[in-house]
Image (tube, rainbow, N blue to C red; front, top):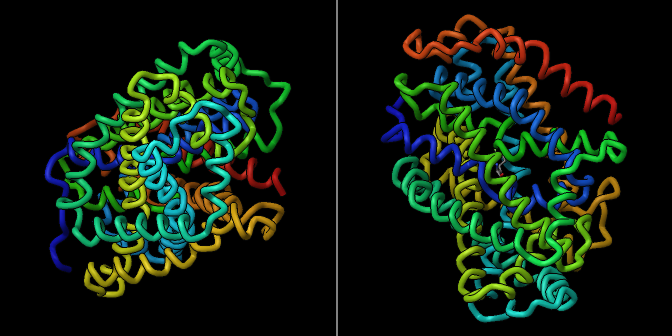
Length: 442
Ligand code: PFF
């Protein structure tokens, strides 16, 4: 096998993994899902999943990736003969599904950066902001055009390889985004009427919890932490032995969660202060935030910066969704990196077109009672990722347990005091919890 590209530094890897985790899942999906699922109780259940199953599956992916030094399919195969490599195959497929709709929403963020720059968002009336969003998503050429641009950028970064593309972009831009989100959250929590939103977010009302809430929280934990499809596994395959995997997994989990919570403070208080409906779904961030910008000095400049940085955060995640697919084509199908990026980019683009149209011209076409974009998201986040995540946990917990414990502790150079707890979660807790959520849904 040819020698693999590697991350230059540990910090570079942490930022790239955090760049994968932090994206539209935190800033777009988490606030609207919290809004739809009743607020504080959703948050608590979400946190419960993140710090038990989420952290454990992340460490499992890091372990398999670094031990296998290959794409998801090849890594399973390198560690164990038999059917396990199908788990990697499921991950590669999940990547196709996720990126198809992720790129559509990524396109919205670029479009909104353009709108902010041209002053099209500079009004604070909730109704007209709703109309702006509604008008934008129902006009097919714009939406497809920006989806195409986003997909081309993603494939372009991937074609450039690990160190040149992904690592450099993540290092510079993530910290700037963090600062901006904090400034916006501060503005939002000091709006008149923000208290109701803060209470909604922080006060759990368990009487509203249904199976849907629990299922949504589980899917969101996997989606937000980039777990269950081999994205973290593939990034870790570009690592060498020195890196302390448990510590890195803890840092990435923590950073991702911090971003989501701050995004909650950025959106939900504003939803209540301006009288929007918290359950209004995928448009929430795009409709609410411009109203916050309109209340700020230099609001237009902030709006532009915010949407531009969000587009970049989305790009660093999108790149991590495409990388397993491309790594698979390179390692297993012997394709040159550029061709692999082009081929997978075109396929995913085409799969994204129905999602792009699903909020506009095709809004009456439903799959299982959901619009196409929502249905793709549901299939990936609520079924494919948790299933993939459990199989990853089972693999580490049962199939390669001894080897995994050595690898996770870098052959003894980074002892992990909770190693037994981790294996216990992989063996029993993660499979039981996910099986319970999925089966009670049927
Ligand atoms: N974690 C990313 C986000 O929150 O936007 C999305 C994502 C990336 C999901 C990578 C899955 C994945 F493998």
